[in-house]
Length: 493
Image (cartoon, rainbow, N blue to C red; front, side):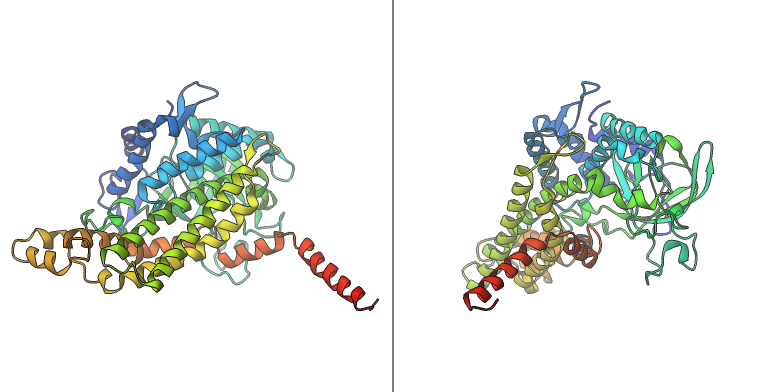
């Protein structure tokens, strides 16, 4: 099949008839339902963009010879990484970086799993079958341009140092309840599938917070991929932040509300040929790091974050000029904060690519250190950018007429006059400020802030993991050597 068009993507999810629930109702067709149709069209736009810019977004499959999505590429050179980043950039630019789970995010992880497939064959829960499954699934997803959502997190019930098996209801979190000749039976729940219900398949990622390998928590430790319309699989979507308003009034929410869903498993049969990990907390805990999936996924994320920061910077500068505050020192200082954030992100991305090396699987893999620093830093910086828009927009983010106000013959001339800026007419200024509003204080914008803060997980856990993994000895040695030198110069031995 090769790279799909937007029409083919829409037809694919329309024909699947995945069981999706929202607002207390079962969705008959996600491609036409008010909560999903606009974001479905946006995802379709991503697939169409692949064909509009084939030289940047497609490459020739090594097996079929067809043109496939560049996000699936197995990078062998630094140039491959540069090309993949350019592809990530094109897709991120389409939404101003506001689609955090565009398909290329998971495509990179599936590539990493597939090319590191022997990791899944090791003793202690692995098998040659699981290794073959990972390799086969990578090829299947690449050759058919499969769109993916994923779920990772256990339900947020009682996190006071209890394992899943110790919860009041040990069958709440998704777990293996039976093994059959055809596969495993899974029951329970997982969070939080972004783009849930509007993709072809779901990858159930290994949770990394299971504890004590080889214990009663192992039934919660697995990884697999199944079609979204698998019997017993339900997507329970949160309230939509696409309120059915015009794209003029809600320029982001009416286009890019990705939706997030609770995933319910009710006697779901997962065939053996779709399983990568089965009842192995140890393998689950090591999967991301030892397949290098986390590195390739983070490369995509930081590429997206560069675009998102560029977009926000453009909005902030435009706001400043629109109302004539671009000459004030404290205003320029705030804009320069975003400029610094942008340049730091670019530097981290540049270093990660130019220091890339061939890994144990033969893949050119970015240097993780700068990427890891960036993914720990950006969630906090995004909150600051979010705040800067609100500070500079002030009451202008509240006094916002709608498209209908401007088109009304009675009040239209008034709102045109009363909302004008220093260098911009009323309609243009309001349209700009509605974009800023949708980034900063709308339901869509606040979801973005929360989403970015927890993108890779709890920032405290991440910072602790970063600290524990950091090579601290050279810096301690610097201090020790300096103090020893000081003692020697002082005649103290």
